[in-house]
Length: 122
Image (cartoon, rainbow, N blue to C red):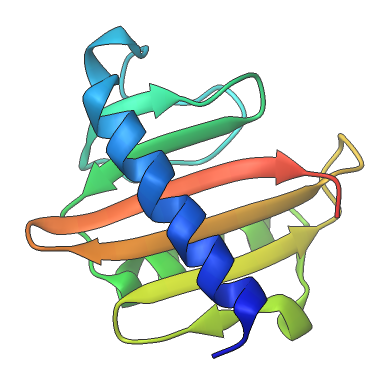
C-alpha cells in the first residue's frame, strides 16, 4: 500500500474519532450538499465542505451507495484514485458544480463503518 493511501486512511480515522467526539455539536442526520444513506448516526459537519458519520452499512454497501448516487448526479469516478481493501475505501468523483473533487472515504469499525465525504481541490 503506498504512503498516500496510508496517510489518507490515517487522516480518515482521525476525522472519525474527532467526529464521534464532537457528534453532539453537529447538525441533524442529513447534509444539504452530499447524499447520505438513511441509517446514519453521529453525523457531524466537518467545516463548510465535509461531513462525517457512522453507519451500519458495510464498506461494499457504502461504495455501492455513493457510486450509484454520485453517478446519478452526473459525477464521474476518477478510477486512478480509487483504493479499496476489506476494511477501507477511498474514491474520488469529478464534475461537482463547485469545480472541486468529491472525496468519499470509509473505514470499517467494530460496530459499522465510519464515512467521510468532502469537497477538495485535488
